Image (cartoon, rainbow, N blue to C red; front, side, top):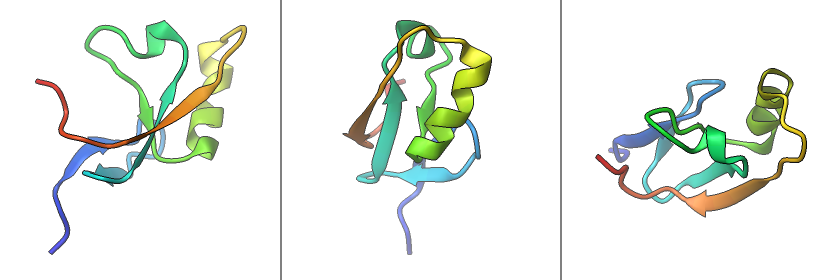
Length: 69
């Protein structure tokens, strides 16, 4: 039995389980407010850039934990 997903990729909607790799955008507007964008891969992060129109962006890899409520 696999663990319940804690996050869902913001682009492809693939579930990201606890302990899995999670990618976050470096731009504060992508990580603020109710909408916190997370991605399952660098390709999914890269595909959000044309719509986001960031001037200078990079991503960070983190280990997925329990989401904040």
